[in-house]
Length: 607
Image 1: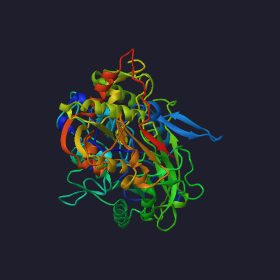
Image 2 (image 1 turned 90 degrees about the horizontal axis):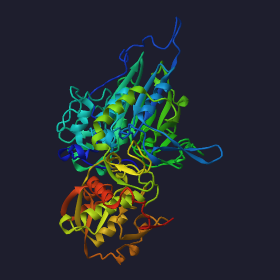
Image 3 (image 1 turned 90 degrees about the vertical axis):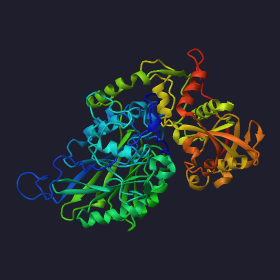
Image 4 (image 1 turned 135 degrees about the horizontal axis):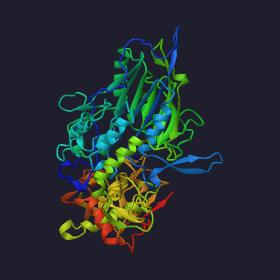
C-alpha cells in the first residue's frame, strides 16, 4: 500500500541524515494566466457568430509523486501493461524530465487544460529531494505548471508549520537557505486541505477549494486527504490538527461552490482503491461499472454528491480509470495514476456554457505511461543537475555492496527480502545490552520505499550501495525504540497485521531472523496468524514472559493499526533506522564479498 507514516525529526536532522518530508500548505490561489475574468469572455470561438455551446476541458492528473524527480530505480520504476495476447510487459517509466515532456505534449491543441494532483507530492522522498526538505520537488511542480493539488498524509510528515513553508516559501528554520543568494519561493499552486482543521479554532488549515477559470469556464476543485491520516503519520506531524470525514466534507463544500454558481466540480481525494489487476490498462468497468475495483474509495465515491463531476484519487499507488455510480445511480469517473510520476491521467470534461456544468455522459478518461524513450525536458534536467551537485558529497558515499537486486518496495510477497535485511539490521544494532537488549525486531512494510538495485545509478559501479540509495529505501530517519512487550502482546500484534483496520488489506510486518510463524490466508481475521506456530529461535512464544522488542518510533506509537505495539514499556531510544541499516551494510559486505539477497523463510504462507 501507499504511504507510510513517519517522522517529524526536523530538530535532530543533521545534513547527513537527510529526511522524509513534508509538503506544502496552501494559502495561495495561483491560477493559470488569464484565468480570472468572470464573464463569458471571448475565448473558444473564432470569427463572428456564436460560440459553440460546449467546450472540452482537458484535466491532466497524477498522484503520489513522493519527490521522485529522477526515474525510480529497479522494479519500483516499472509499469505493468497487459498485451493483446494476455501476457504482461514491464515498461520502465517515470522521472520528472519525462513527466514534463508528457504533460506538455498532451496539452498541445487543448486551449482549456488544467493540471491537478491527488496528494503525496512530497514526503518519503529520495535523497535528491529529501535532503533539502523537498524544496526541489516543489520547484519541479512549479515548472510542470501544476494548477492545484490535494494534501496527502505525507504532506504532514514534518508538521503543519513545514507544510505552510512549502506553500508560502521561505528558508528552512533550522538549515536555512540551500543556495547562496536564493530564497525558496514556495509553491505557486494551492494545496487544498478541506477536511483538515485546527483543533483550537476549528478553522481549515489551508484552503478547502479553489476555482479554475478561463474565458468564462469555471471548474471548482475540492481537496481532501484520508480521514485516517493520524493513524499513519507520527503524532508530531498531526499535532493540533483534526481530520474529518471525506464524504461529508466534500459534500459541504460542493454545496458552497454550487451556491456561488460553480456547477462543475472535481474532487481531489488522497484515498484510493485496489483494482483486480495491477496492469495500468486493465478495464475496471468489466463486467459492469466499477466492478473491477475495491477498497475505501468505492464507498467514498458512492457517498459523494452528484454535484461533483469527477474524482481524482491516490494513496494506494494503483492505476485505474473506473466509473463508480454516484448516489443517484449515474456513473462517475474515478481515476488514479499509479505513483512516482510513472503515469498521468488525461480526462476530457465537456463543459456546457448554458448550464455551467459538465456533461457527465461525455466524460472520457485514460491513463498514459510516462515513457523514458521520449525527449527529456531540458529545464527539468537542469533542475536535477543543480540539486544533484549540492547533494553529491553525501549522496555518493558508498555504504556497502550487494550481489544482486534485493527487492523491497517492488516485492508483492508478504515477506520481502529487503524487509528481512532491515529487520536484521535493527536487531543487530540494538541487541547489545547497552543498546537496548533487543531479542526481535519488527519493520512496517510501508516504510520500505524502494528496492536495493544492483545496477549502478551513477558512476559508483554495479553492486555498490550509496548513501543516496540507502536513504531512498529508508527516507524517514525514524529513531529506533526498544521496549518491553509480553508474549501475549507480541501474539496480538502479529494478529493485528490481518485484523481490525488491517483486515481488508493486511500489513505484514517484516521480522528479524529467529522469529517464525505460519500465515494462513485461507482463514479470516486474526485466525490467519496461526498462534501455535509462532516461535522465537525455535521456542514457542511464552504469553507471560517479557520480550525486548525493537521497532521504529512510528510503530512503537501504535502506528499502522498496531495498538499492541504501542503498549510497550521500559523504552530505550536508539540510533535512527537509516544509521542501523548503513551500519549493517558496512559490517556484512565488502567489494569481494557482497551481501546476497536473504532467503524468505520466516513466514510460511498458506494461500
